Amino acid sequence: MRRYSFLATLLLLQAPALAATPVTLDQAVQSALETNPTYQKAELASQVAEQELRAARATFFPQLAVTGSYLKSSADANQNPTFIAANAPNETVAQLGLTQPIFEGGLLRATVARQQAQLAAAQDDGAAAANALRLQVVSDYVGVLRAEQALAIARVQLETALAHDRESRTQFKKGALPELDATNSALGVANAQLAVKQAEAALALARTGFATTTGLDPAVPLAPLPALAPQTDTLAALTALAITQRPDLRAARERTQSAQDDVRIARAALWPQVSLVGAAGWDAATALSTANAGWDAGVNLSMPLFDAGHLGALTQAAVLTAQQAARDEASVALGVRSDVASADSDMAIAVQQVALADKSATLAARAAGMTEQGYRLGAQSTLDFQLAQQALASAQRAQADARLNEALAIERLKWAMGETLP
Image 1: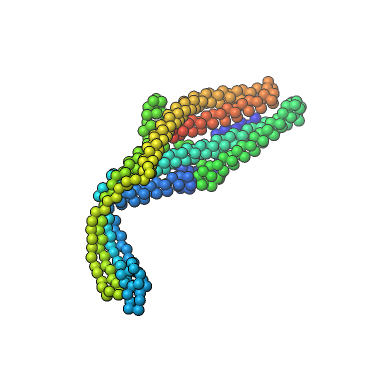
Image 2: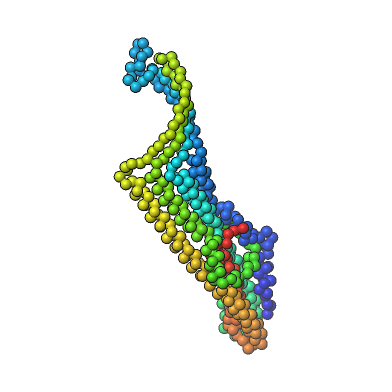
């Protein structure tokens, strides 16, 4: 009976795809970053925070403003204004005003510090979104490779079943094989054909999910995953590193700092607000036939005396919000520790499964070869041959899955540790 090399058949089945340049994992991630709306939203939030920081810093500088007005009032026959508040029937005013804060109880500095923390948090939110998107791309990428390998194995099994069925029919016609064995051989072909159809449907579904995440053509060929070495550091070392570099935890810390700055802002509102003010202007009144130009300068002070507890309540609300932010930060830190522990355990299990799957595939191949030889000698039935082939296919799928699971586990641990994209 003709035997088929699994690797050779896999390469043969993928030959049309090899004509095109395969997309690498990094290219798929880059495409997702350019098209994914969730990540783009995080990037826009960072840009918004940058502009808000610029606006906060601008309040330290003098504020210049130009004002102008023209006022027409009622007048009698002699052009004397009849409205008691008017100086002339027609009055034109132009003025340049300047305001410079000189004391505000730390309000401006607290506002700038708050916006700096908000910007840092927004940037870390973007990094967290990028890392989460990368993990999703890796998962979808692995899903496509897994489905491709399952389809290749199913097609190899179909070719094996067809070859076995042809030989079984030949032997049956010669009277050298019972009808039951020939029937079982035909049943094996039908089952193998069904397995191919199911694998094709699974591959189409996997490619649709990959295309949705990355924005790439569903039919684009994918390059093999790059070789990744499992982490060998202790769980304590991995956790310590994650606490330092996990972007969502850094963002939580920065939001705690921002909330503390909000407390400073609320308390600053209780202090006097002192500013230098000045103005230069020109005033013309038609009835008086006069035009005056001049200037003034002084100090402006504003301080709340009674507001029925309004500012005090706002301050207390800010204090409580800061406490809430600190609790949120602690909750995120617990989640980071849990993520690292879970990912580290999954990676250790995946490494063990690779070794076991390799051993199982080797034994299954040996058993399939021995069964085929026994079938040729008449010592094994068609059912024995089919069961051996099914066991071999199952072992090959498990072997391929184990290697992909190991790669995915390594990527999940990288995400849990907060490794940022290059």
